[in-house]
Length: 539
Ligand code: FAD
Image (cartoon, rainbow, N blue to C red):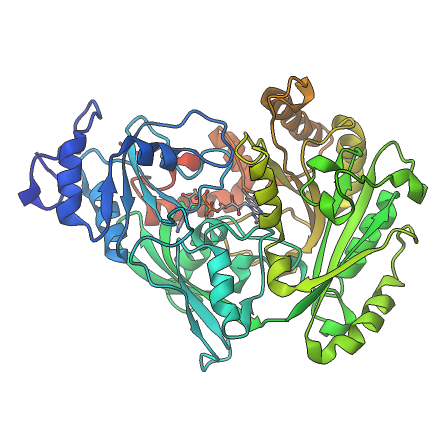
């Protein structure tokens, strides 16, 4: 009793409209084999893999099947089928599954289908027939060089392909084993965002399969509303199958520097000064500005600790005269350069450092190839994996905090709620709002400068109550309550909300109206990315 226009009648018997939502897996397999260029799997191992994520928190939902697309047309066919099916079923694009709250899997009473966009085998090789990144040098218009990539491509592959031509994307995330479609659905930020904007500000064009199963090309020139809707759109309006990403000449090397502060005011003043230099020539600014908060000496649990010390030889912050209730701050900056201008780097870096107010004896410097710098978190991942500390629950909380209240946040959270244990790195860095396009779906605080505060914690079953998932989730709630009560108007990045009122509050009235309008237009049956829990599917 196939009732959908999108499905081939001749394979027969697949009833996608059964009320009890119990699907016949054997028939689904038959159907998949004849219908898609790729494959449709109901193998329990595949279903399990597609339903868990990096967060490792919520109970995985029951899935109907996993589609490994062999072509863009497969994505079109499946979404069209879901849209045209009498009772409908949810479809979720899954990039690399690095969400922390189940966003990349269907969430509805009816089991859904996951489209595995980043279909990698154990050797990290794309197993589908998707085209590899296609670099175009100097594309002929004012936009210069770019790379066209499959939506499920990982950023590490985009980097490798671009570097072969001496080019690289401009704006990054700290970790590169994330998919293009996944980060563009959120924003994509790192220490370059103050200068280049988030990754979504560095995209020229997208191919998108909407919730109606239409494949549309969108850009600043065509289907503009869809283009901006999808950028930071939490997967709500369509599945990105191709992205055209701006490239720039890649530097060869990176000078990577960290300095310490015991005074929060000095720290943020310097960070804000450094991001105010955006748009200046390279020689007069840094290329990357981040920072982090250290509330304990247990840096061993910190991904970035090896920069300072080894576990055997831990650094003693008291040796810098730091005695500040346990809280210190590290500014992290880089300068990109090529062999050809290496002679000037020392002087230029020195001149910029002179303007900063850090603890004089606390300068840590290293120098490495550009690729190694961008891929730095992967090295930490390998170490954590070898200790069994990667595949643990990750109750992460990412907040955009307005500049005017960051000092209150410091007192209430870093020096207050966190106590003396962080259970993972805490990043803090400011960005310029004018680098974000207000037409995109992502929302940021209503101030010209705002900070990312990323509490990237791992829950451990160590017997220490303060490392447990429950404790850390509870602490996250306390932080959000504190902001609420103190009137600190934070926005969650990689947001996770449970009620419509919370989502309305997240977007604000005007942006919420726009978001709903876009949903009605591009995904009227609300079948896409239900795991974000913004709209209940209409089945
Ligand atoms: P998934 O988790 O697979 O999907 C995320 C959402 O996007 C889901 O709703 C999914 O349905 C949707 N989606 C996936 N693919 C597509 C597509 N092709 N089209 C439309 N929608 C799609 N973020 C930063 O900004 N900066 C960082 O520095 C950073 N570092 C991180 C480090 C680690 C170790 C981890 C785990 C995450 C980090 N993140 C960072 C967060 C990351 O950007 C997001 O979690 C992102 O969504 C992960 O990409 P993914 O491919 O795993 O997406």
